[in-house]
Length: 150
Picture 1 (cartoon, rainbow, N blue to C red):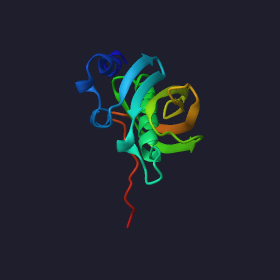
Picture 2: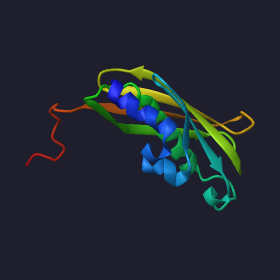
Picture 3: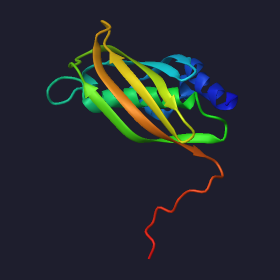
């Protein structure tokens, strides 16, 4: 598990080692722990929807990245994961300022992980909550066929 966690921890010190979407949107990893992550994003007009507020997809990107990194901290060297379900609840509009997403893995089984996230504005008010279910994948394990049998 240490090698992957070392990679994740490198995001804290060198933004160029972070996933490209983090750089594209300006997300940054602020805190990392076993099964936990905190990320930040400065919001401005670039991310507005036609109503003049933050587009929900941008907030979801922040939440998804934060939950994914929290899950990554629980993986062994031979494991990876993919999100199989993602749900967001938007609680209040955001126009500008800095958002903070705090994610925590609430369940980590052999094949399924579940992670929750709370997104807060710069006044520490909750603006969204989310949950993701992730499937843990292992190198070398046989995968079920995905194409239909004829």
